Image 1 (cartoon, protein in one colour):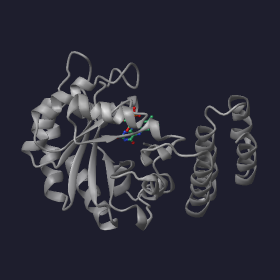
Image 2 (spheres, helix red, strand yellow):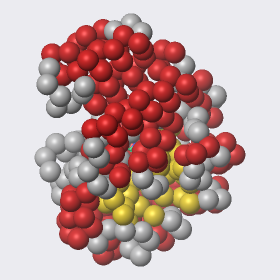
Image 3 (cartoon, rainbow, N blue to C red):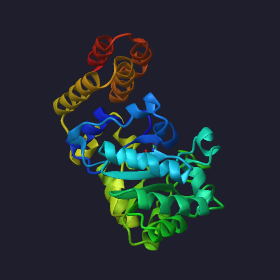
Image 4 (tube, rainbow, N blue to C red):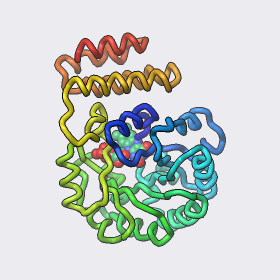
Length: 290
Ligand SMILES: Cc1cc2nc3c(=O)[nH]c(=O)nc-3n(C[C@H](O)[C@H](O)[C@H](O)COP(=O)(O)O)c2cc1C
């Protein structure tokens, strides 16, 4: 998740039991141009591996060059983003726009398949809108071009993040291909994950928003309060140790606000957390709530 799944968060998720980890989306063009902020997104900690890195782009050759760079930098797999719904992104033909351009998607699959030595996977949406739900066709196309696996967030681009994720579309993709299908969308508990596997036959489950403020979801069991506090302290320490000062402050605010979700007085304290000027100030506000 952009702005969220950086190295500290991913490592905490791994330590809680998450299986396959994926980076934030990385703009292929900006990476090839050595944009410093984009290159910073490729940073990872050795203990995170195996780690996939996700590319965003529409130009097959640029995507291939970016994939080679990421593999050289240590990515164990390359994932192609075909789901980002952001207007600026789809206007460039990237992200979810690829769902309505199968010809371009096919060329990208072929070019990336040749460029990527490790696992090459894609992340798709159900389709562009409810009249063009084509996830099974795109998945079949990907399989025929040698893609190793597909993650399905079954909402369409038009749905963005609204309404319930239509899991039946995941089941349709499972029926359409033999490569592993990862189900995604609205999983916020172990019971949800089991229900998704039972309803769709997917090989595994990807959790996004359900892990925000609750990385212990990957433990798969109830985690007592003191163990949660240990995980939060570990996360804060990793943020401070591995991110540049400004980024660290932003990440501490975001994640401690998520960790405070549901605590008494959390909503009232949120403006103070976001106004804080130092990591110590943010931590102090949070632990007073905890
Ligand atoms: C803040 C935010 C950032 C996201 N960034 C990405 C991204 O970079 N790449 C991607 O494939 N999906 C991204 N997503 C989508 C999620 O991976 C996921 O498909 C979606 O949130 C549905 O799953 P969930 O219900 O488990 O959150 C993002 C979602 C959110 C809320």
